[in-house]
Image (tube, rainbow, N blue to C red; front, side, top):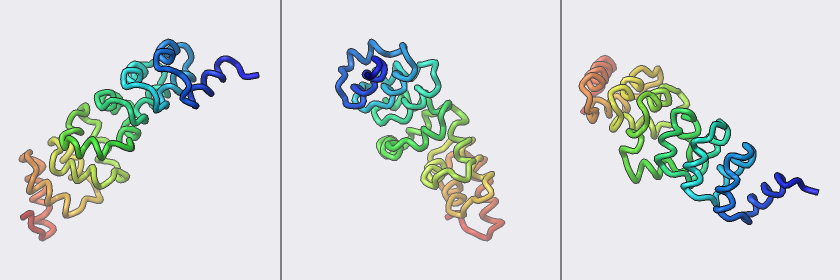
Length: 177
């Protein structure tokens, strides 16, 4: 015979629980909070409430859920940068608002851009729209591409990274035009 906790989790998995009942369950048992945070049938308000949980794994489930509001994602990004940058709808958010990543706390994007595993799409975005710190992080990468240098030199709105990119292109015998 299933315990009340197991019965709740089974009902949640089947989508048999109303959001009002979910709200009443929040904060009682971490295992429930984690399951609710991962549930696609919850509401953005529930996700926002769970994003403030003192349980790290609950917050991780919130940032991975596709129904989580973008403001909540931005708030959780410093705690879970890998999960944020792996979010299945991130490309859509950036297409909808090219300055979306600019809303991140300072340093979050810089750390991700410095990582050799950072997808090229994010690097290309930062070359054009990133702040000075983001572009300088790209310039420090050992695997920097000529295309990235050209984008920073041509489109970078910050003089220091643009100048550094031009200097590197000159050394490489490449044009920034």
